[in-house]
Image (cartoon, rainbow over the protein chains, first blue to last red):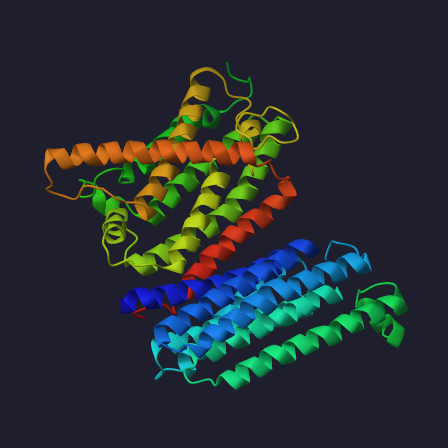
Length: 220
Length: 260
């Protein structure tokens, strides 16, 4: 039973890393949003499974928050933003997809090596959760770095936060207050970013952040 | 019928490729482990045998000197250069989990309850299926039935062959498909496979199970081929890059799994 419980936790966390890679691979905006929703669903499943095996009912609340906010509200809102902005649906990547994937593999390898070395004495479940969470965070950062479009940068930011939630659930004894406040601060950040997107769009007629660089006088 | 400037290489290649693929196909345990040549049924040896078969076929494609053979060979080698690393990474992933690259050991391990539920194996399986589609010139990569200039890969390479040579090559291609399907079955679905010293009834059951699995696999292949379209040649690196990535990710994830 214990082995199976561990295997399922491993499966879900590994699935989260895999979906992060699908995000890197994706070059269409709507498909990216759908993948982000899938990311949040897998996160919710993973957190719920952790709640089940750790016997920690407050984690179910975290799972429900992840499911409602990140799998439903934020993707739907982003869909509407994309529609209202009327922007180009192809994502322009700063680096090609191939090198990005290779960089992603490097980051995953880095986080595994780092986490396995640092957390030698910890519980194996927490260990693998931390390693996967660090890779999800780094992959989210990579999405933000390699995309020029502001909407896909927002998606990268949100997936980074999913990695943080995964890390928080792996560590036993994270108080619920912290998780709820993190979830709400993310929602606030999302609203602020949404407002900013419209402002950027109003001023520059595009959400390509390259326009901001040019406006500052940093011409490439 | 042979081209006038065909060399000896052109004439022996069908036999070489057929022999290599035949040996490789014979090494894969289909319904029973514990065979006489189990010690040589190594995943890496099978990859090498298939690689040498492809090498000779690509040489023969360029031998006569027509432009079609050249374009077919160059495309085939490009696909192979991407598919082979993906295949090897998948082999590493499976070998790390099963503790051996020998197919009968792998099959015995996978059939036992020790395996559990592993995300690495799922990734390795998808990677192997993608590689198998590419290597067998199936639809998302290449169309085995096409004779349209722009899309031919494997067919362009063997365009100069006719008669018994073509028959050998075609038979080799069929065997290769059977090999890959058997490989997928043997590594990931070795249920009902007979072990050494079992009774004759158990052999009958496992033969029936093997045939059933082959039929299911062919059905799934046909469904997949009708549901997808061939991709552009320039998209092939992305397709196989995803397979490579899955193999690598599976290998990496294995290091944080249970018992390591």
